[in-house]
Amino acid sequence: MKICLTGGTGFLGSRISRFFKQNGYEIHYITRNDLKGSLNGIADKIEGVDLLINLAGASILKKWTKAYKTEIYNSRIQTTQKIVEAFEMVKSKPPIVLSASAVGIYDEYEVHDEFSDHLASNFLADVCRDWEASIAPLAKANVRLAIIRLGVVLDKEEGALAKMLPSFKMGMGAVIGDGYQPFPFIHINDLLSVIWYIFKNPDSQGVYNLVAPQMVSNMEFSKTLGKKLKRPVWLRISTKVLRFMYGDGAMILTQGQKVKPQRLLELEFPFQFPDLDVALDDLLKR
Image (cartoon, rainbow, N blue to C red; front, side, top):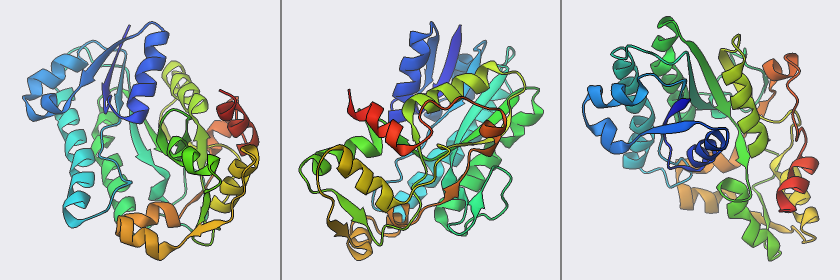
């Protein structure tokens, strides 16, 4: 049993790799060197695997200079286009492909399920649209294609929560801006369970919002985290400071989307951590 993975060295890639190894799968990694090489080498990695997961992409939580915005874009779209080209050369194709996207594709005003057409008009949304479009040809290649639009993945080891914990534990936790921006989140274990569910369910394909059912704001998240750690949350980080630090990339922190995992709810997917209280209780007890 084998899966093939792009973006395997990142936070999500490493957690997904560990999960599948624990379930008896061998992992084939498509590396940056592979992507710089021939299509034949990439095709060889994909040949005969049971699942292809496409996660490749430079981190979005850095300062968005003009050069770095180009890297954000190319590391997703050009990589995915090359995967699609190599896929055509594979004789024994994987029956299912999962490709990442983000809830940043949606605007910050409406409440969005997977069929929402209220998409944002900004750089991140453009990246998501083009990312999804670049993998779309595989839907015609007699494989199941699932697009997973990710919210903020909560994990104590890595990712956003891990970066926040030191300051919050010192009583230096902060609300970002006015704090009213939505904070769509999902516990790492629910994310892994959803991926497993999609993989194993032969009817699963199309777009899935990977967020918890509960919608919270940045202020609610920060205050709840402070309460769990028994620390005050009285600081605010101004949007001006964040724009200085991250440029246009500050929008990742100062804006958010109201997102529902409607398709998973209709399937009665058993979220273990459907709300923030239970998610943080689990993550902070370890």
